Length: 397
Image 1: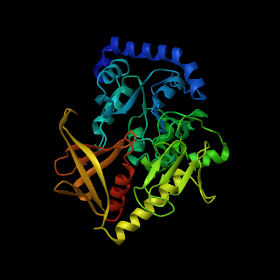
Image 2: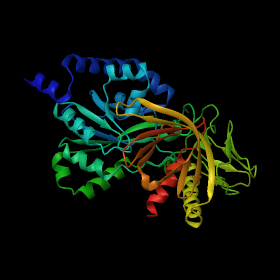
Image 3: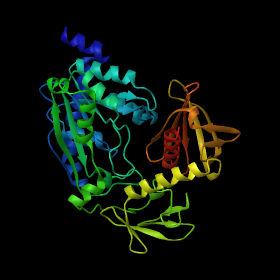
Image 4: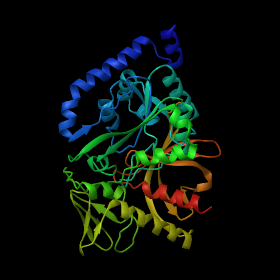
C-alpha cells in the first residue's frame, strides 16, 4: 500500500525513484572531491534523513543544486524553472536522472505548490530556491510572502540553508567560475510546532533573515580573492550607466576592466570584487546598481516620452507546450513609459510579469492573453535595465 500511495502522489514508479536516488548517491561519490577542490567548497551536512523536509536556500550559481545535493544527507527533489526543459538532449537526461518539479516563471505557481506538497506527502524532501533567480548585485532577492505561506502549508519541517561566497564564485553577469571560497551553511530547522506559533509575517521575516546574503558585507567580514580568467568580462550585462558621465548603455567590458564609450573613463576589477576608478574612487556592483536604478527612475519621471536607447533583439513566442511558435528579429526602442517593437507600443500595464533567465534573456508574459515571449539580445545585451524600467513604472502607479 505504501509504495502504491507514493507512486500515486508523485506520478513516479518505485523503479524511477530508486534510479533517482542511486544516481544522486553515485554522483556525490564521484564529484565531491573534485567539486571541493575546484570551487574551494565546504559545507555543513544538511540532515533530512529522519523525515521529509522542505529545504529553502538562497541562490547564486548555476551549480547550487549540485552543491546542495552534496550537502544533503538524503536524496531530495528540486524545483526548477521550466527553461531547463528547453535544452534538448540535456533536458531529457535531466528529467530522466533527477525529475525536477517544473515551475514556469511569471505564473502564480499553484501547480508547482501542489507538486511540492504531493512530493513531501509521498515521503521525499524538496529543495526550493525561493528567490527564483540568481542575484545580479550579490544581495539575496526577495523570497516573497508566498514562499513563507507555502512552507507552512506543506506541514513539513522547513530547513533553511545559506550559500556564502556564491556570488563572487560565479557572478551572474560573468563568464566562467572563479576559485575563492564557497560554503553551504545550515541555518535553522523549523518544526511544525514552531511554525504554527508564528504568524505568516513573523515566519516570512525569519526566512528572509536566514537566507539573506550580501557579497559586500561578506567581503568586509572575510576578504577573499576570487581568481578567474577575464574577471570583468560581462559587467555591461549588469552595469548600464556610467558612474562618471551618467550616460546609459555606453559601458564596454574587457579582461579586467569596464570602460565608458562616451567619456572613456574606466573601472578596474579587483579580485575581491571591488571596482577601482581612475580617480581613486572605489565602487561595488551593488552600489552601482543602486545608483543606476535611482537615476533611471528619476530620468523617466522627468521625461517619460524621451527615447532612452535602442537594442537589436530576437523575439520568440512560446505556445502552451513550451515550444517556439514564432521567432522574429527586430529593434526595441526604449522610452521611459513604454517600449516600441516594430509598430507595437508596449506599456508596463500590458504585462503580467517580466523576468530574466540566465545572464540576459527577458521572459515576458502579456496580461490580456497571458502569451509567453522571450527576448534575446547580443551576447552582452543588458536585460537588467528592462526589469528596472518595468519595476520603476510599476512603483510609479
